[in-house]
Length: 409
Image (cartoon, rainbow, N blue to C red; front, side, top):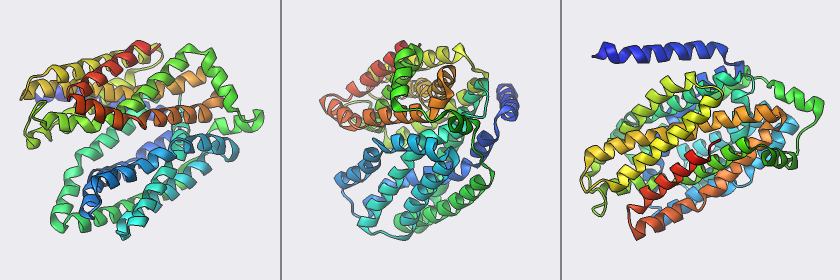
């Protein structure tokens, strides 16, 4: 049985190796160094709210702290698009990414001062300046047919980091919440320093930067004009914005699984759902993304969001205590995750190439900003929906996923 299962995965890994050889230099550097960020930072993201609670922050105060980066995301990506065109992709990316993450993690590792902790969230918000710039570096020197495999690899690395979270749990169990979290933060800081040293030495400016130097930078007016004239690109920006609205609603799903008004599962049993979603996501990313190019991407996005809609509808319809139905719903919803974090971004980047590569930095910055704007009301909206009736949240996610499927051109 293991041999039978292993054959498709071996084939998928072979296709990834073949795709890797066709990636551009920057894509290789960013993907190879990605574990130095993804593994320790997934641990920090998981234990940070627990650490804040240990420091006697109230739930309301924690919510306010988490809103700081969201506010900065409203305008910093737009600034990043301008700076990337003005000063270059690599320089803008390295400056804001390094200052943001190193500043934030250094504060987590060294102090419990409440004002400095708030400053750590400000540093984290600065990183949003680089969201679009990172994507430019990631894909601009790679052919269109290989970009899906790049996004797939990045998401696989992050999911593997999440699966390794029990290692951080062992540290917290051994040293306690506060000392354990600070030790994890010091480990993360060392890992990030190594990552930035490698990236500074090996990353290069992509060809689009030279194109901008020759032809001049684009304006946001040109970007809006390009969106208005290309229905396919406009549709994927709308889908990306809806995905930004859905993402913060995920907080309600663990609550839904354990709430007596909903499924009422045991909290220990409910903890298996992250694995139930992560494993299919990894399998899909390994087997699906290296195969996709051209119009097949749009078909895959529509099918993935349709599967996600079915998963959330199944979760909403599942009776009290229906563990197997909820597990199946989680597996189906993993298709939506793959679409939102790998396929949509690939399709958007490829659509830009068909219009004008010079627009990439500003258009991705605009898409990131729209997604951030959409994410702001999502926690409150999902909270109100949950208060009115827990099953309204998966129903809303099902409808939004269906809309994403129908809107994709």
